[in-house]
Image 1 (cartoon, one colour):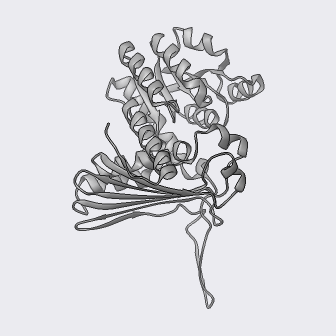
Image 2: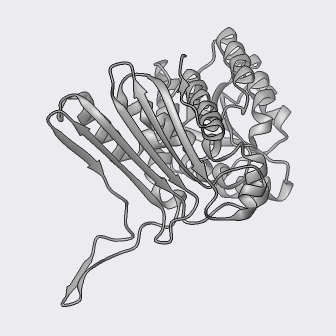
Amino acid sequence: MLNIGILGAGRIGQVHGATLRGMTTARAAAVSDAMPAAAEALAAQTGAQVMDTDAIIANPSIDAVIIGTPTTTHYDLIHSAAKAGKAIFCEKPVDLSVDRIHDCLKVVEEAGVPFMVAFNRRFDPSFAHLQKQIADQVIGNVEIVTILSRDPAPPPIGYVKTSGGIFRDMMIHDLDMARFLLGEEPVELTAAASCLVDPEIGEAGDFDTAVVTLKTGSGKLCQISNSRRATYGYDQRIEVHGSKGMLRADNMLENTVELVTGSGFERAATQPFFLERYAAAYRAEMAHFVDVISAGAVMTPTGQDGLRAQMLADAADASARDGQPKAISF
């Protein structure tokens, strides 16, 4: 039984706590949070102890930690946990600074501990199956990947001001997915962005509507479309066009019932937001983390995946601001 400490008892900590509660190979052994009431609530739900963060990291009976705290805390927590010999599961982004991510990866490598970046969408059953179909050459050679990702509503403006912006906070998932599906690294990126949803987001120096085009060395293309507003719900779609056909993963709906009358066809709404849409992905990624630690296999997504997604997000932000394409070199 793997003993895991959950650092951060907010929304994502609660998701991972619920997953661990249902596992037989791992358990939440301890929980910490800057808000004592949040830690106590999650501990009560999972059967874990409430401890402070330093105590969790220093405790030799705890094998691994989940870092679900604000991004600004990740750097110090990764350093401390790595030096304490803990396996680390870190929510994205690793850090908002590429240089600081390099520092984190260096200390992880020196410590020789497993390190996983939580790009959960790779573990979504539909997206994972789509990627396997690509790898199996079902549609031949990939030519164009199209990723649509739109939130039902903007986050609070306070969050926008500290998130690093739409490319580093929201599109970073899609940039990782682009690498996952293209099968080769992008060498060029072009971005355009606007503020069309909430003027306060523009006043905070960010965008709420963005598109990015990626091009690989062999000429494969990926188009990503993001918006902070979708009046019809949480929009998550992928289409991959290849030399022998096309693969498509559509939105997950609240149910599969379709009403047909003289007025036309009517289907259910999309699932409301990421907690519902990616529930299976969250469970699968944690199972992977636990299984790989137990088997001593290679962890994925790796720290390098986190680094490269951040580098792409930085390039996208720069391109959107100066209107120039950016060469990509990892």
